[in-house]
Image (cartoon, rainbow, N blue to C red; front, side, top):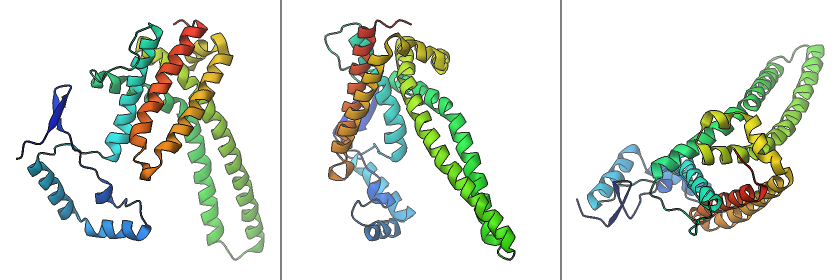
Length: 267
């Protein structure tokens, strides 16, 4: 195997070139036809040969959807929490190093667990309503003989369509509430690391309610800033997101840290 240039993170040595997966899974960012050709061309055997060749070259790292979206988001959230702590204690260097990757992933995972648990009631309700609506639509298409039944089923469809719109509106408002309370959970985990305390939305509210106006402004600034950076990052077929995304998390850690100090919040 060729000794490819590498670096070491947390005792793990990885190559400085990482094998991607878009060209293996059918994401050409060109056209649907190109996507279909890629999926047809890259059979399991050909993909295996690509990985084997990477190994021969000394390329031992792979970037895939799971590693980038889930684990990457967890690590960046934990990294933002360390930036938050540095702002709170007044450290000169605000951006932390990546010398505690495992710790960052663990903290980010805790925050994901909190938001997921808080979102469960809305998820269960939406699944239930849309399942019933889907069953009604299926019954409507199957029963076409009795006009009175058709009218009844049509009315049911209208009711469930209305419920669908209502559920969407409620879910939107509920999502905003979860996102806002998530700021409080972020602070709790960053300061204490206590998942049990962060899971209680009352505790998150107590952090934010000390100066609700400032936290609302910070949340809005974070939302707008994230939108702008995400839009910039979507250029060049999304490659810019690799640069923009860390800046979004850095902004979050610094902004929430400043707000925490300004509001005099305590845990």
